[in-house]
Amino acid sequence: MHFLKTLFWVVVAVLLFYLGSRNWHDVTLSLWGDIQVDIKVPVLLAVVFLLGWLPLFLIHRGRMWRLRQRIENFERQQAARVTPSPEFAGTE
Image (cartoon, rainbow, N blue to C red; front, side, top):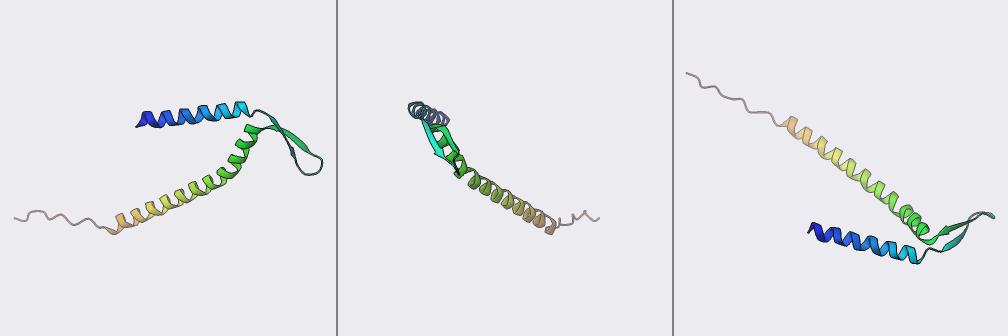
């Protein structure tokens, strides 16, 4: 199964490299005022992808961190609530 996962990501990487090399053209972006920027299409797509993905990823990681903290606090409370039963020594 690990081989298939690796093969899948290799195929995806090769396809992205191929598409990037075939579309290596300049695109002119008109920013505010008279500012214009020439940027390659694959670089522009990568920047736009990261601008959309990164905030959602950070929100997800923050929520997961907060949930882990809540679970750890709950487990600590449960461990403190459970008192060990006294061991009865054999009385003779």
